[in-house]
Amino acid sequence: MMSKIKTGIEGLDALISGGFPQGRTCLIAGEPGTGKTTLCMQFLLEGVATGQKGVYITIDEKPEHLVADAKALGWDIQPYLEKGLLQILDVTHYFTPSKLGQMEGIDSEKIITEIMAFIQKSQAIRVAVDPIAPLVFASKTASQVVEYIRQLVFTLEAAQSYTTLLTSYVPVGSEKISLHGIEEFAVSGIIVLRLVNLNHKFVRTIRVRKMRGTRVDLSEYSFEILPNRGLVLRQPV
Image (cartoon, rainbow, N blue to C red; front, side, top):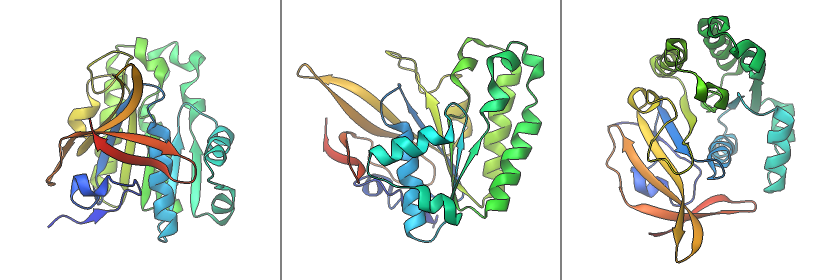
């Protein structure tokens, strides 16, 4: 029987038979503003609360913004950072517009090596990569982008030591699951977050698209993002 790791999301564990598959990677896909970053932070904080170290790898945002956004939700993560229970790795410098202007300038192997070395040194059990590829990749079709995503996912999965969440942008109004079309095929699980217009009011929804080795509830549920609690699942939509 596959071991599970609790998500920290109220109501989600019941939909995926107890939690995320331990040692696997899961994709959190959704349009901007659907709660992907909040879900990742909540997952890491659940680990901190149970003695599991976590690493947040940020590709589009600066660490100080993550700290401020968490505090706005009632989560003061600074003490965890100071104690080394939670660490943030900023790799935004690899994805600056000047470097992305020429695709041959992307050294995916170097990026992945640095990420894996940091995770191993941190002794993390839970990992979040937000997002798996920066938004500036949206206009690129080069094979290096696909190879970077493939290598990162396969390297994380091969280690089998970390339960990892990867976020991916979904273009607004699109039915796609991921930005580049490769992410969903490489990961072990997919959770889709959406903004849905119900009775002339937009609500956030969550749906488990797949979870390998797990019996899942495929219904779509509404959820709220509440202070001190983060994502809280409500009723099916």
